[in-house]
Length: 341
Picture 1 (cartoon, rainbow, N blue to C red):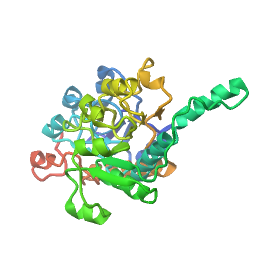
Picture 2 (tube, rainbow, N blue to C red):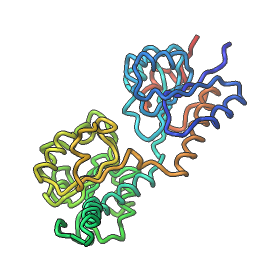
Picture 3 (cartoon, rainbow, N blue to C red):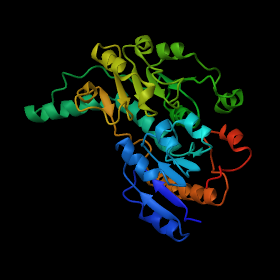
Picture 4 (tube, rainbow, N blue to C red):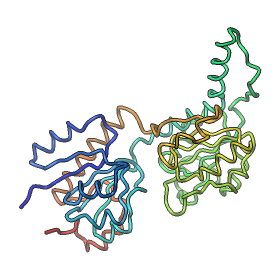
């Protein structure tokens, strides 16, 4: 019997020396690549004989999935798994492991930070400092008006783990907080002390800040398009720390260019990174960060340990902590993993 093989398609850590050392102690073959944006042929060549695959950004589409000879488990480094073709993976009897409770606090903190940065117009503040430095005196004539956070309305679209933490973090800011989440159980609404849920259009029309916390899937892709942006107040800000594809980027650029919104704050983009000529990079009312909302020392070390544990579980014929494609159970007929030659 051949040694089990684990292959990493791409990773955000500086290196995976710790993982290599740990897996070597159990005589597990290990390869780590940086193929997140590589040619599909290179990706397939690297992973086709792996038993377990860990992926971050690499596109695991149907063609890639069908090239896999031995794979039983694909681990997605993160909360979402929209870069993995769920239908193709399930049809092959391959589990998708993921980490839905990963970096919850970090992303929520980042979203709230971005909201405050918008409210205090920090992008414009930097511009004022730069132009005043050149003039050798303060010149604040370009500032718009400032308003307190207190009394304004925060709309949270998606109130799962991250969205509900945003709701709790902002409790002391004096905001009127409203949510849109048709899937949130009534019991969870009661636990959070939320009296009602709002329809999407109603939330967009009422909110001064709109923050997105939904997964990216067929239902939510371009959930925020030109029509939805047109419903928002001209004084409102859009904040996205979820997935770039939830927002129709050309529609957002049009809305910002034509003054439909006061600004935006983005940690995620479609595509990633944004093109060099994107207008989003040109405006000081747009706060940008490099898909970094997840980052913290605690989150980074925690997920590395959990990925290693799920690799061991698979090789010991045990299910991962979380399975994204639960329907694979029917394909597997009660087995933990598919049998391979």
